[in-house]
Image (cartoon, rainbow, N blue to C red; front, side):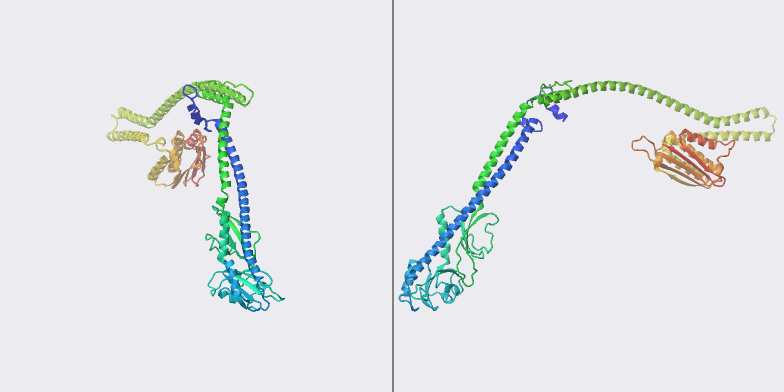
Length: 611
């Protein structure tokens, strides 16, 4: 964030010129962010409103289209029904003129039928059925005519006009057709007969096609005549072949309208009773095209208005936030160290409050910075003084270490070489004074004693030098040194040794570890020389590890046990200072020493210490 603030201004402190497109970046300018937020709100709200309005308009257009389709279906149904009724009326007018009272063959019946067929050529066959159920005449031979006498629907035609659907059979060799029947005029009480006409099924399809042509060119309507069971009776080639119950909307791709009332033909043998249905459908894409165009126009207009609103909001917000921008430039200058204070903007609004608060914060920060500089200078002086003191203490520690080493060497020389040389000097003085008076045997004995003293002194000096050259705890660590000590004890004395030493003991190399090693060595020496032990155990384990912060050291426990003769730790032993030395060394490292022993029960030395 600081880097972005620094880069936003030139090195001289003057702000760089911001391009128009950079001014629209919401990540760099609050005014742009406000404008884009307003743009998003306006566009989202407008889109929601436009979508709602478009959906309402589309539903209204769809409802209007369905109503138009229903009206078209009703018109087509009325037209088709009118055509059928016209044929029935023509047949009724002709039948009223052919009255016959005897029920026999009417005179010139064939000529009358031919004349009627000439006036109504769409009637493919005409026939007159007498009251006794025999054919009195027909225009030509039709195999299906022999099955008509005796049917129930034809009996109704003796008193009123009847329309029936006739299903063609294999013997007919023709398609389905409509059968129109009207009663003949009768001079007496009994009916004279029935005039029957066959209207081909293709005539229905032709009437539907003619109605579509009458609507006008360029329409995308499809007319469908359905039976009572929903099966397609007549329609265009595009809709033929669909089974009964087919979804004529095809999942919403088409809008469908249905005629309200349509005529019901009399049920013929093999037909399903019920009214016919006339439906009209149109592609939804074409029918709803105006609504969808309006939808797109509204969306484009809303986006344009939203964009203009965003630009206007950004400009207005930029002018309103000019003082806040100036305050931000001052804050960046303070951050770069070019200013030490902020000028509070005038007014009583939020910008003034922010500027006053920021000015107080900067002033407080400058005071804290000055105090921090003073504190750093004081700390630097203290660090220098402490460093000099630590160097003096280190020099004193090195001097003390050298002094202790000198004293240790002096004690070693005094205990070994000085004693040996003193004894040797004494023997030499005795030889000088008493040697002439001694016999040869006495002189040889004294010389042998002198040689023994010299050899013993040389051996002690070599042993001391060897101990100095051996690796110490500071070099190898407490654990390896204890292992080496136990190995030398086992090789020298033949005592059985059992050791359990934690691997972390190899990291103990301090003076405290050296003191612990001295305590263990003294305890093992006592077990070897005084206890007469056959088995010795040494155990060094961690009681508690150090904490994660390193403020507290680890807690350790050292246990040396043997199965020797044992002793009473409470009894004094004049001339023996081993136990006293163990206690003194334990106190020097602030350790807890416990000696547990009794005559005949061996000895157990336990030391707890921190390292």
